[in-house]
Structures are given as structure tokens and as C-alpha cells.
Amino acid sequence: MSGRRGIQLAKEIYLLTGKFPSEEKFGLVSQMRRAAVSIPSNIAEGQARNTTGEFVQFISHAEDSAAEVDTQLRLSIELGYYSMNDLEAVFRLLTDVQKMLKRLRHSLTTNP
Picture 1 (cartoon, rainbow, N blue to C red):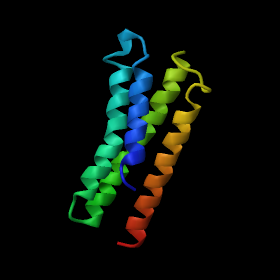
Picture 2: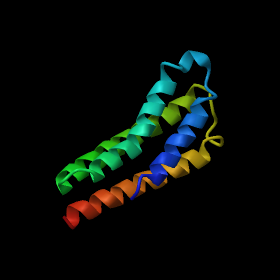
Picture 3: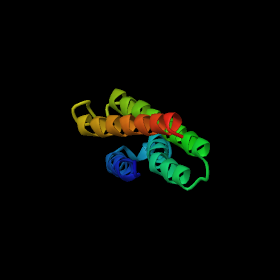
Picture 4: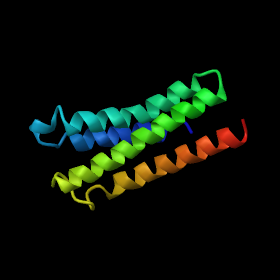
């Protein structure tokens, strides 16, 4: 997986969080953006490593960041910033990214 879908997700998170209340600038906005950017960043860093084991470790970090984004999106719904309907496309994209990461990790660990 190239980081394209991860970059697309990060872009969507930036657009969404740009509409959050200003008091969230250093709270949820910062956390969501950091976690979203971490996904394609970890993929890229893992691809640049010399061993499969290191690559798998960075894919795992990207999966952790994707889980954080999922939680933060759900929290933004609970806080009333968005509805589930508003975020349906972003959740689909996030699910796609999570599935691709899982498949990539699986292929790296079963075919080293």
C-alpha cells in the first residue's frame, strides 16, 4: 500500500477539524491531525527501513494511529461537532485504510 489512502484520510481530517470550535484547536483538533498524519508517515518510514521486521513495526504504529482517529471521530460525534451521517464517508475511508494496513502487515509476516 502506498500512503495515498492515508494521505487522503489525513486531508479529510484536516478539512473536518478546520470546522471545530476554536477552543478545540489545541485539544481534539491537534490530536486528530497528529494521529491522521501519523498513518501515512509511518507507512513511508517503514518502507524506508532495511528489514521486514522494522516495516511491520511501523505498519503496527500506523494501525494504532488509525484506531486513535476512529476514537477521536466518535468523540467528535459525542461532543456534537458532527453527526454519524456527516462522517459516514470518512469512516468508510478509515475502514479502507485499516483493512489495507491489516492486509499489508499480514503479507509481510507470512511472506517475509
